[in-house]
Image 1 (tube, rainbow, N blue to C red):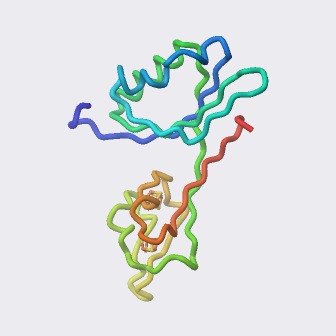
Image 2 (tube, rainbow, N blue to C red):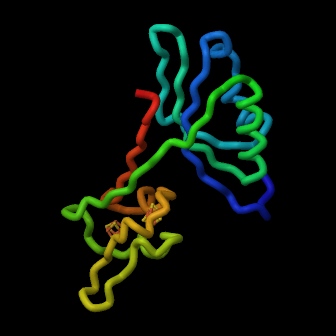
Length: 147
Ligand code: SF4
Ligand code: SF4
């Protein structure tokens, strides 16, 4: 991966027909396009159609090349919506998340010395869900058309 290119993290929903479900196309994202991915959801319908929700990491260039490759294989791709929420009872207002939140959706209220979460500013990047020591931040994926 080219370290000079900012990394991206995307959530996408893939749907594909049975005729191509046995091919290693998703593995090729890593093998050929240098992308890392987590499979958040996998489903095969009774008609043998496949649905996957992937969290993909990589450079913008590799991501675009990988998505073009999948489309060329006949896979339909749509962004997977996501929603970030905070469990107010769990949050200890330690402040760790404010250091990594790129949009300042999590910030210190100087008056109360508590951490406020402004959902309107949140880009749903998911970084706070990984750093929060008490897992107060959660990210829900809207599987939309996959249901
Ligand atoms: S890291 Fe977690 S516990 Fe700490 S302020 Fe942020 S949400 Fe609250
Ligand atoms: S998901 Fe990203 S943008 Fe939203 S609050 Fe967490 S770190 Fe900030």
